[in-house]
Length: 519
Image 1 (cartoon, rainbow, N blue to C red):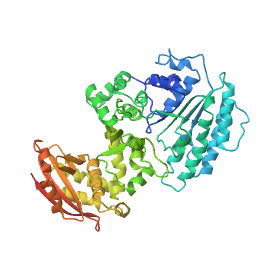
Image 2 (image 1 turned 135 degrees about the vertical axis):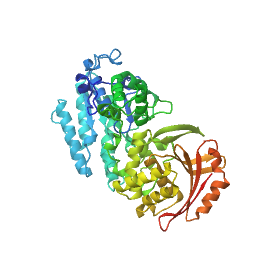
Image 3 (image 1 turned 90 degrees about the horizontal axis):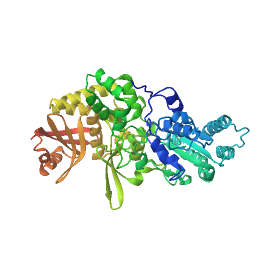
Image 4 (image 1 turned 180 degrees about the horizontal axis):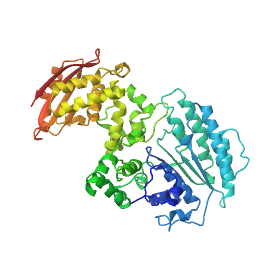
């Protein structure tokens, strides 16, 4: 059996204690060799091994060859050279205000200086301390250079998105990170990692020297596990998981893919599996939702509470996908960068790259909808659970009146703040979230040869075609369904087709009328 750790992010501890390490050192070599540059940035969602990659680079540049025995990089790295490594963990720098943040940062810089043998580090500002520390470390090296590794560079700011002090935190980080560029000549290698990339007018205006390899084919599988890697490194764990769940090894791997696979970080790259969730699955021998142990960030809920998003089909340009301004974050960009959405499609239009995003897998979809349902419905978790059971039972039993009654339960408590600027898409989004939450296959804005269907829901025996109208009679929605012959798209499906026309009232903020016909 493989020895698996889900709570160890230090390369040295992982290797010395005999835990399984999926060898990613060939991808790290592409950056660390210096052949294509010396300063890099990569953004990835949480729980994807960013801290472990930073720790691996630290051991590499410190020349700890014994830790790399048998790994791909060991025979091709020049072990005769070593550099002082400054490793800053910004994940521990979360603070209530900028003054407290600066105090924490100053304290960490002094601790790192002491650990690296630098005495009497001078300066009062974080940027001055960093400048002097880089100078001192470079002076200790044979070639006058040092290595700078910054993990979770954006964590201090993320907790303040949508708050009044976000600009203060942005400016504080911008001043601190400006040192990275001004002292570039004294850095043999620089690597920053985090969840987000802020726009060029923000923090990254002073970090434009970094090579952004967030969406680079060479690092598409650096974080996360490919199918081949899981089969190669964890055969014993897969077999044990299969036996515990009464499955064949092949079927158990298929369940792994359904639950934890699906992340794509380059249009031409392989999809990868979430490493932490997979480790938790192996540890417990149970397919379950491990992503939900960390709640959705508050700033995301605040954004989605103000403007419901159409999660059925999300298109975004290359520029919007890559970065944003902290004072005006875009919901889709945040959802992609935090790992709730991933690339599901790609196309070139007029010289621009356009990406289609979707949930990567079952685990993330369930986590997202579970966190979002109370926000959209106003129901407590126990209330929502009862409504979910009633809704899904009704759909599978083809009891449309019972389903509409359950749907009204969700709408009866929707907060006014969510519906003060109503449109049909908002109501469509909420219905979509409810359907996906209860486990029904749902797709919005389904294209036909004569328009788009608002929503299509499917069960093993039935297809439900749904059209919405706001402050208009349901008869208009039904006329649209029939006039555009939406049912024709599914005529050969072999399933019963049911047409549902729904009318919402902006005044009552709920469903006021529905018409149902079976084709």
